[in-house]
Length: 189
Image (cartoon, rainbow, N blue to C red; front, side, top):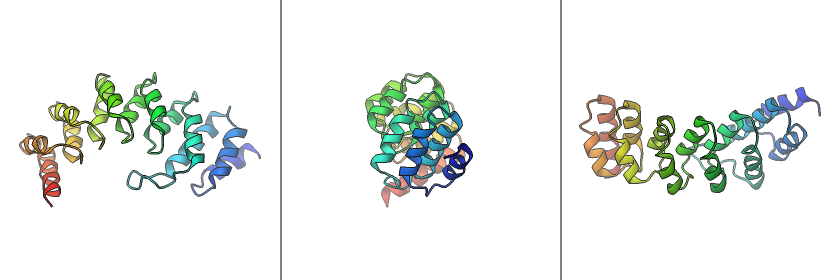
């Protein structure tokens, strides 16, 4: 297979995963193709339907992509809902803060890893605010953040405890207070 043909094929998110794997194995040293493989896998998944795209080949490719030099590929692995826990644990120690920040947003990241990431730099710590798997005590702390967007993600997070939402209802920012009010109504429904 020629390089251009491989790039064209990877544009198709319905390309059988067996073919995606073949392309990856043929072009492992080509960062552009490796990045396109990672993007192809990302396009197959959904944060709304976590089982969409799940397969042993998907998992195998995610594991291999977690080892590549290309930051964009590791970024795609860090946010993918099918990434195995042990890979998320490894990527939580990645040298690139954006990769760690995306691990912090992944609902499959174990709580003990999220607690470690809470001690990381702000961009990483902030990622926890929208994670539906975040521990209540971290969401409680993030609800006090000076960044309105962090508080807004906490207010919209289904894991945020009622008492935190009640305090966010009185937030100085209208978007945050409105989001907390909506989430409380959803919890009451």
